Image (cartoon, rainbow, N blue to C red; front, side):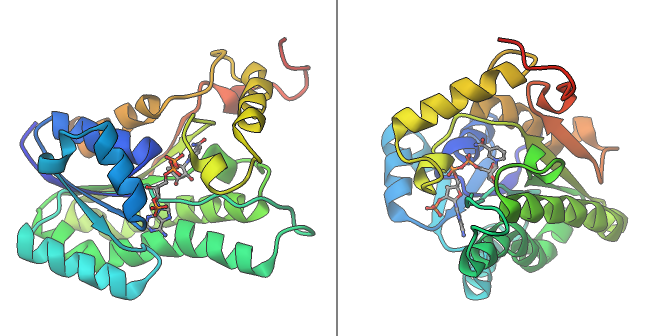
Length: 260
Ligand SMILES: NC(=O)c1ccc[n+]([C@@H]2O[C@H](COP(=O)([O-])OP(=O)(O)OC[C@H]3O[C@@H](n4cnc5c(N)ncnc54)[C@H](OP(=O)(O)O)[C@@H]3O)[C@@H](O)[C@H]2O)c1
């Protein structure tokens, strides 16, 4: 694989951090964008080799000014972007009756408007690459109602953004695809206070497990392999696709009780 420049939003934790590390291992230059310095420090404690091989920038993907600053940095430093992974996301709890309007807006802002803002801002640099790939990290919750109405709606919207942009950007040879994970072990549920504590999280995973035909919850590496593929030339005729990476949970048969 030719050495390229990639930007991964939410690259300081979970799935995003694994994607950053994988791409660095392949010799690419990687830029991560996330909000808190604390998570970046923790990521660099865990993977100190990334300090020299990746740029960890702070900024909020749903903020237009931050997106402008990221564009300015990328333009000045690299002048080109071969791939963008819209991975940053938040999770909020709640049904129509229980979710607040503020939480609804926040979820849609980060998970849907954020990728729109960042992609729009970085488009000139993607065009400069003469062929680029955008990967949106969506969710199976965007394909089938999950436990949060705002989260499911945000990811369903992101999938439509994927399909829409595939049509829009195809003439520039920019491919756009969604990767829709099932449940993956990361800190997203705890950090967003969707579960009360570590014990409640473990209990949630244990309860979910029987619904996965492969018998296990995902790991970030299960997702990053697909992202690597979609960023590579091996997927050069794939665009507008919504690809589940979910241990088979979408193939689960709802009509029979889950296996013990
Ligand atoms: N884990 C799962 O079970 C699962 C399943 C399906 C889909 N997904 C999707 O996978 C993606 C990654 O999730 P994860 O599980 O790896 O979560 P995670 O460990 O919580 O990582 C989320 C990353 O996004 C960053 N982030 C959040 N809001 C941001 C914002 N407004 N601007 C910039 N960065 C922001 C976080 O850093 P800061 O907080 O410092 O900004 C962090 O680096 C998300 O889109 C999620 O919806 C996850």
